[in-house]
Amino acid sequence: MTPDIKVQGWCPTAWQPMRAQDGWMVRVRPHCAALSAAQWRVLADLALAHAHPQIELTRLGNVQLRGVGESELETVRARLIAARLVPEDADADLAPAVHCTPLYAAGDATHALARALSLAAVQRLSPQALARQGLAALPGKFGLLVDDPARRMQATGADLQLWVSADRGYGLALADSTPWYCFAQAEQAVDAAVEIAAWFAAERMALAPAPTRLRALLAHRTPPLPALQMAPWRAAGAGFCAALAPGLHSGHGRVIAAPLGRIAAAEMSELAAQLPADAEIRVTPWRSLLLPWDAMAPAAPLDAAHWITQADDVRLRVSACTGAPRCAQGHAPAQTLALALAAQVPPETHLHVSGCAKCCALSADATAVIVARLDAGGAPRLDLGRADQRSDSRTPISWPASTDAPANLKKLLHDLYL
Image (cartoon, rainbow, N blue to C red; front, top):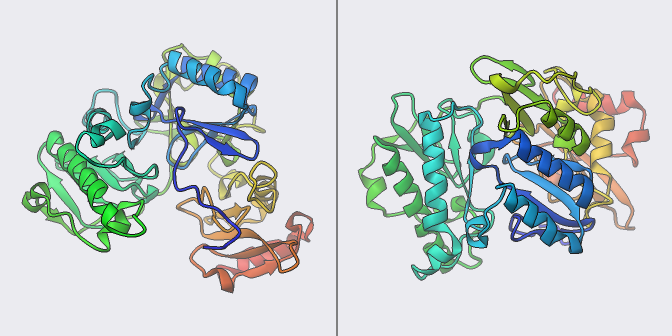
């Protein structure tokens, strides 16, 4: 790890916010990926009154307020609890995250699986539940996932992935492994996932340093659990599925996105106000929103400066971390730079801009990265390369790159794929 950066190793929640350069980060984990229009209005109001006037969408399908002041934390948390956006119990809020596909119908098998796994995570894997078993709490990065049958979220990177399989059984994959286990009933798959998580909580402490993700422990040992030893095993994976692009999707609704996953709070408030209070607006893992069919026709047109409604919008080709000046470790204004370069990124490719070597918020579909670093003299420099390329083989580009000749930048980006 580069010596000038610091990895936090955990994710913020409402009860355990994270301090950043610009204030506190408070994260909401939508239950089954869904928030009502009324809840979105609460988030927008909080962002406008107590934080930066933006709502951030994360690549795990979470929702985040940033820049909350120290004196505002209690007020923000109380409003979130009152709106049923976060649990009123800190222990429940600190249970492992259960990320859920937005592609389900209310009450179907995928929805039921997500609800069952979420309940089990709180009741059996929260810090207090594990303490009763003599186990330490799971790391903050540990997460579970309920995917749709096509496994569109396979690249999300959860520690345990569950889904309803094509034969109406239930699949369970460990970390990012291709083989997966088959179960006939949802309860069996949920129980197996809980047992693996508890096994991880116990076994990780035998290694130094203790791993924070399941895949690191699986490199050393395999869980000797009866539930896995008795379950049929399949070697074939589902393969990579592309993100849902903005537009209409038959059977699901309309997808809209925000540039870099940052929603202007005033725009969100306006959108939510046009819908019934109980209308669902779901969060996707692709930093976009899904408006189901019964809530997809707001009266006023969406402002193109704040919303992405077309699949060919060049802003979909870039992502970025927070960057300078809001992040203490950021050496460059990553978001400004990403939007400035969006039109230069070739179609069917994706550029991620990182303010430091950590590459926070790196998208699974990123094909190229620009990383800001400090040179020997302490001046910022930018390195450009393929996402799968070693950092020492990346190409330096001039600083600041946004003032470089567009043709030169475009050529460098295109040259990566020749």
